[in-house]
Length: 77
Image (tube, rainbow, N blue to C red):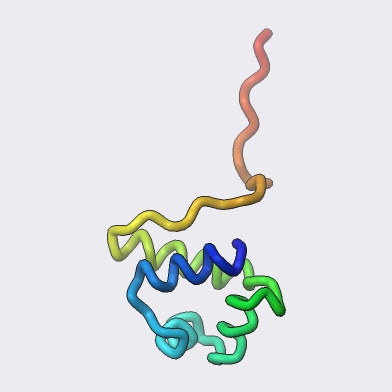
């Protein structure tokens, strides 16, 4: 998740940085670092934010990198 995607998800939920920090059990400084690209977004926080977005009835931001857990297509035999 890129910093811009994280910000979009947070704003979609209508959360401030402080509220997001509380929801994800992180500090405001950590949220700031993720949003400014100083540190990468923690994968578990990314999943939690996506779940909160879905629970709120909104679509989570699209992933910008390949999902290693995605199923590969069946081969044509």
